[in-house]
Image (cartoon, rainbow, N blue to C red; front, top):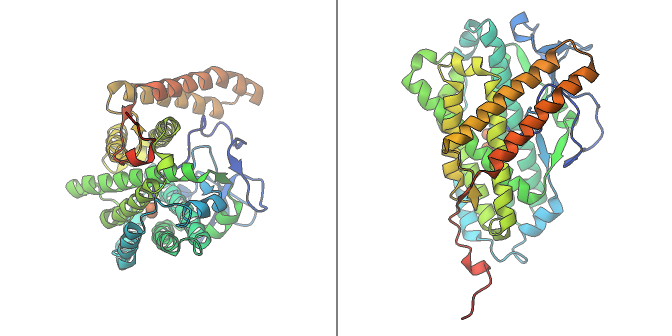
Length: 409
Ligand SMILES: [Fe+2]
Ligand SMILES: [Fe+2]
């Protein structure tokens, strides 16, 4: 996993309450909504401005509704879906071929660091340093989220479908590598994400398997497009190559692409998730959630994208359009993101979100803040709804005819 899969809930920073709908807590853990980061050496002031020092010498950053989430699912239902006795649509040959590809492990020796990292990090200062740390931290959390989910799926499906299970385990290997590499990047800034603590302390969002497929597929593909776009841009404009991690993105994004293709194969094996009107509505919903989350998140962090020479909105629209074109190959419906009205709606959401953030940061008492938020949240919801209801594009290339009732003349 590469992209942040946080689904849109209106909206970040003004609240750290977690919506009850669709979420499930796992295990017992602290009620504090913080990501703990442990400092490996004293934290330089520039890198700690968004973090709160905690009592034990650790630092904590505030979790918002747009921070990357951890996911869990109904593993019993997953076992049923991948049981070859029950599901005759499972194309085991295709999965065996995919497994071979994962076993080849193209990136086994790719993630090797050198002294350029630390030297480059030391040269990044001022606001860009802070925003770099946040980028590494969020990316690491998103990758680690994929690692946890795939690892558990690998474990739970071992008996029912060893081939699919092994692919999940090998994908968790990739995600662990990605998360580890990003965490080492944080060490260049004298920080480290406390991944053990994160595993226990984060809230896990529960999605039924069908929704895990949609969300994870999109997350992998949007991750691919983000990484490859940054890589290509920096290759053409090396003067913005301020930290060497971006040089690794070309091979790295191929991992994400393979992960996405695996989910595509999984969905083809579950045609009931792709071939009815409900699937079309959900497909559009997940596209909208993932695109809006990314757009709002990135527009809050323009300093990062500008720091590497990108125009944030142009970059995001490119990623959204490419991801949507890729997604249209498998999802039964996608959004018409190339319609200029879609971008206009996204931009209005950014403006509303900025106002919401300003309310959150104001000195008003909580009641006044909440009153001020009501019309803004209503405006945001109405923009989201309007974007969702724009005429969609019918898509999908899966031949589902054989699964539909045959017409008899
Ligand atoms: Fe990844
Ligand atoms: Fe991935």
